[in-house]
Image (cartoon, rainbow, N blue to C red; front, side):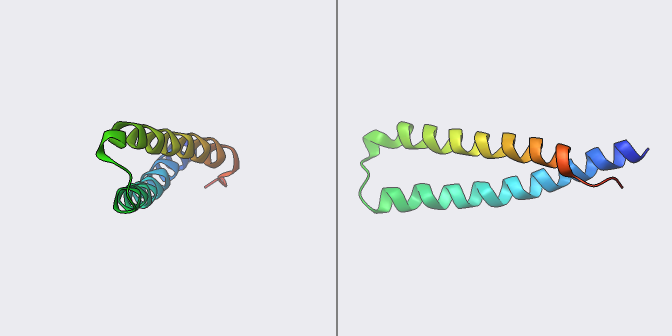
Length: 71
């Protein structure tokens, strides 16, 4: 039961931090387009931001499953 609660706690924490990080990346994307990145580069910017988000989530999952305290 303790392992199940630990997994649920990690998933909730990753979900909340993922939402916050998604909002930050969406803001960075909007700032880049406001600063003059042309619309023709929309797919490339979106790809880089999605890659950064995936790397962050992989790091977060591995870190939390490794170092999250026992419940």
